[in-house]
Amino acid sequence: MQVAVEDIERKSADALMAHGAGPWQAAEVARAVARAEETGNIICGLYYLESYCVQLASGRVNGTVEPVVNASRAGAVAVDAGLGFAQPAFARALPKAVEAARACGIASLSVCHSHTCTSLGFFTEQIAAKGLIGIGFTNASAIVAGPGGRKRVVGTNPIAFTLPGEDGPAMHADFSTAAVALGKITMAKAAGESIPLGWAVDSEGRPTTDPDAALQGSLVSAADYKGWALGLLVEFLAAGLTGSVNSVDVMGLKLRDGLPHDLGQFYILIDPAGHANALADRIGRVASEISDDAPVRIPGSRSKARQQITVDADLWAKVGALAAGSSS
Image (cartoon, rainbow, N blue to C red):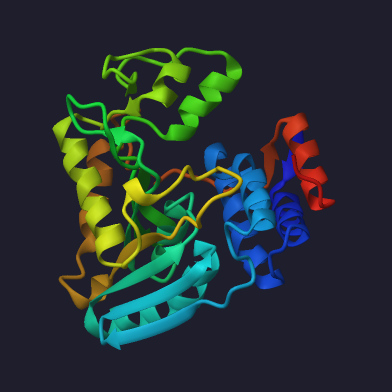
């Protein structure tokens, strides 16, 4: 069925408030849910809404906390999410981080002690909308083993980056440093489908196409040692520079009960005008070179906003039930 993006946002906010979130906190998270659906990132959209709601109800996430912003140095901004959602914390801290980047040419923004941020690109897009380059890092519950291993050490640990352009992002990418996002494994299991070789290993470290065996085992890094190194870098920035927890110390992100996620996100904001300021020209040079080489493209450069989203009817009914205060 077709659903308007604004209706997705409104219903998501209603669902979150029905389970204990404050109005402005719910609005920020709902905006992220709607944006994920708008961009086709269904794993971070309505698919995640029920988890937010049940963890609000169980107390695993604080939906009413007021984030605390601190700027201890000229180019370093930090915000304590207080074991609440990442989206409201980021919203509170972004103006000061943008101000710092414009003053210094480059600045960092650390979000500590937060619930999973789900779509990391949602945040770097907002940085780019201010005319700045945004680069983000976050970790998650441990599910990825090192090359040749079977022990879960880090999460899918995504990286996202967005470069500003005249009419929206000139480049935008948001990807897991694992071979695949965990949600694609769980969705394959729910659909009774197999997964490609190269996504995961079973509990004995053997490559598998069985999503259930994968969930009992571990995911593998993208591009072998290269992805493993990037995943570790994300881990050390997201946990080490925010004071939040390591992936191995986070319980499953979608479990109803348990300790709060206590995760961190780390962002770098760069003002192109504070450097050589040749960004637009250099992007344009590459774009012109590949313009006649279909289907090659600069990631995110052709994204178009959509007003209507195709949503599974059963999922939309679930959203309606959540908005009415019900959850399974």
